[in-house]
Image 1: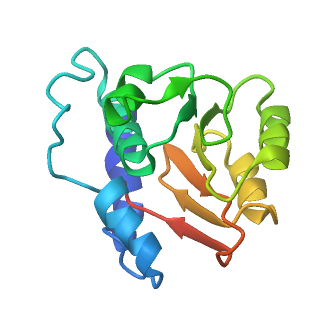
Image 2 (image 1 turned 30 degrees about the horizontal axis):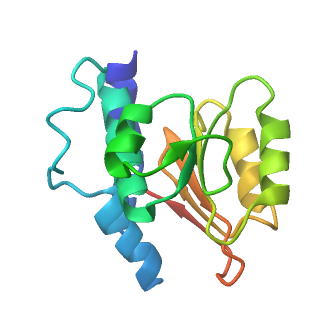
Length: 172
């Protein structure tokens, strides 16, 4: 059924392509050159050769985020190959710098703990927001969360307190 859903999602979000309507120069740059970057990166040929299309698409996004952020620690049990290719100096451990949260199990408690320890430079990737829209809506309404990017398959959350609260829908 995914082959029918994918074009429908893309068409519903067609007005949110390539940063249209984003007034913040920082957020526009992030959408254009990290989220929706279409140029092939140096590691693309060697990464995810056996992955399905969605894992490869998300993995490449995670690679670009790690390449942009250059964190010293990453909290992710999956997609290590992509994260490590983006930032080979990063250590995989419990972290508040770059965190991937999957909406399975006790994710609400994990999110609560992360929010209590989040710093201004924390980047949270929430995977599976298409299946749990209620949690995503409560997350975007949380006062500790500043900027969110809804990519349908995953969401990106920034906690920088100096920024104005903003929620973006991106055609990814």
